[in-house]
Image (cartoon, rainbow, N blue to C red; front, top):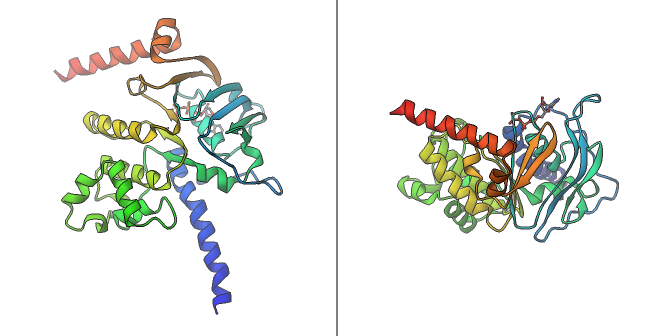
Length: 301
Ligand code: ATP
C-alpha cells in the first residue's frame, strides 16, 4: 500500500512547491490563467546562489510577435543592494518581474543571477531563490501559523515565531487569545489589510530568499499603516538583493539605485538626488506627486 501512496505523496510535494510560488505570483500578476510556456533545458543544473547579483543584459521581449515591450534593457542589481523601478503605467515594470520569475523567456539578451543565465538552470531552483511580497497576498482559510509556515516545507515553531517577529506581527499575535492558532477566515477576511500584508511578509521571511521582488503598491492601506509596512519591508530587504516596483516615489528615496523606465527603455538611473539634479523624467514625476500630495492635504483641511 505504501508503494501506492509514495507517488501521490511526491505529487503533493511537487504541487506544493509549484503552488507556493505561483499563488503569490498569481496575486501579483494575475497570471493563473496564463500558460507557462518555458521548459527546463535538458540536464539543467540547479541555480547556485551565495549573495547574488541580478543582471539584465540587453533584454528584448514582448508578449505578442509584433509588439516589443522591452527594447534591449540592461541594468544590474548589485549583490545585497536595493534597487527600485519606477515609470509611467505600462512602461514594463511588472514585465521585468515576470521575466525574473521566468514566466517567459526574453526574445534575445540574457538575465543572469550570480552570473548564471536563468534559462540554463532548473525553474524549481530559480523560484526557490526568489521571494515576493505582492500587494495583495492570498491567505488560506487556516491558522496564522499555517499561513506563515507555508513559506517553507518543514518550518518549525521557532522559525514561525522568528518570521513573525521580523514581520512585526508579534504584537498582534500576543493580543489574540489563540495566538498563532487563530484562524484567518475565508481569504484572510478576519484580518485587516495591514495584518494580512504582515502575514505575507512573515511567509517570505520563513522562506529566507536571497533575492526579493517587492510590489510596493499599498493603496489598500491607510497612510500610517502603509508607512509602518514599508518600514518593515525595508528591514526585510536589508542585506538581500532586492528589486522593488514602486508606484509612489516617496517610498524609494533611499534606494541604492533607481531605474526609470519609459516605454520599455531605461530613461535614467541613479539615486534620488542624482535624478532630481538631472531634472528629467524622474524629477518631473516627483514634482507631479508632490503637488498632488499638497492638493490632497489642502483638501483634507
Ligand atoms: P503599471 O504601472 O500600470 O502596472 P507596468 O509598468 O507594470 O504598468 P507592464 O504590466 O509590465 O507595465 O506592461 C507593459 C506593457 O505590456 C503594457 O502595454 C501591457 O499592455 C503589455 N502587457 C502586459 N501583460 C501582457 C500580456 N499578458 N499580453 C500582452 N500584453 C501585455
